[in-house]
Image 1 (cartoon, rainbow, N blue to C red):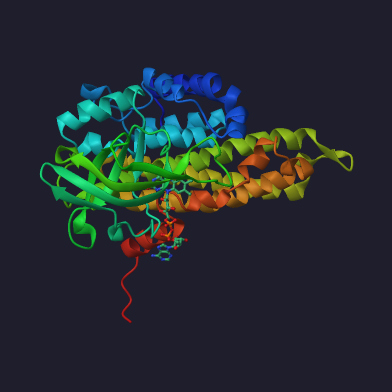
Image 2: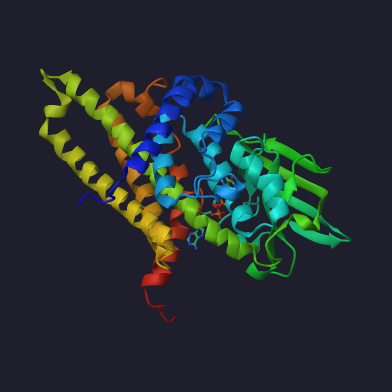
Length: 385
Ligand SMILES: Cc1cc2nc3c(=O)[nH]c(=O)nc-3n(C[C@H](O)[C@H](O)[C@H](O)COP(=O)(O)OP(=O)(O)OC[C@H]3O[C@@H](n4cnc5c(N)ncnc54)[C@H](O)[C@@H]3O)c2cc1C
């Protein structure tokens, strides 16, 4: 039996997302990347189709589906060929809102989650800081109690959707040092003292806005606390599993798209009287990538399966899938660009564009080194010094 065994319902969902990517993203992808922006309206369009709350409870406007649908959503959005835009949409539905869904009060869900699922309010996730992103337990942005409010002071960096967000799901320090002092709050971006201090220039993903934020004594009501005080680190680590699955699925989907494009080129382009795709040196090289991509997809599907089942080994499976995908995409995309010769270095060539900024895949939502730490911790005995 093929794994996964997609049902008719999966295929219908895939078809709907594929159409959305073909009609609403792909025709504009190059323009948005050149302009450094995609329209906010896209969130509303995605929301209207139910793409921004796939796993969320129907009581809040979600579709009540599982991680398999998240994988399909990602695989198909990537076909729109604007990864920056896809990152913006996925931050909204997978990264910034899941903790409100899972741990927020009903009042927070009504005010922020419901309009985010509809695409009427845009969300960002604020965890990383100028002083460090991997070591979440050491974050410094503080939220001090003042009557019925928290007063927030500090800064965040590399925040996707940060220039256009209506709210930030923000990691703050409400207690002492270490993971037990971290909490999550909803911070509206129209609060006094909230500043987008810098729009960052990236080497790729140009249509997504990535910013530095500054919080200058920003007051938010204490009712904006997500879940319990001091449990934010735990919530973030849980939410990371979904984020990492999304990244793994994205990398595989980019690899598959780039590969299909390259094989079509190799079948046509002739050198020394024969198509590149008929040369054994290239066929063997590509056979290795075909095999590794299938291995990567299998790891990702296994991770989706474990997360959907709530298996405690889910974190390990997701870490392996993300690590493997990040290693795969670097080599595969560069080889595919190489097969395009000079065209593989031209700005209007899709494969060439995918070869820019490849290191990003091994950084966002937990770097490859952090993934290795998780895998080693779970599978290796601790060596004594
Ligand atoms: C395009 C983009 C979008 C992003 N969007 C968001 C967002 O929306 N919200 C958000 O909060 N953050 C976001 N980030 C930040 C991202 O999550 C961080 O960059 C990432 O977590 C790494 O943190 P850092 O950059 O501070 O690197 P550091 O933590 O300073 O790490 C530096 C190096 O040390 C390595 N390292 C870390 N730990 C270990 C270890 N135990 N052993 C060995 N080496 C180690 C890292 O892998 C890395 O190579 C985004 C980043 C990018 C590039």
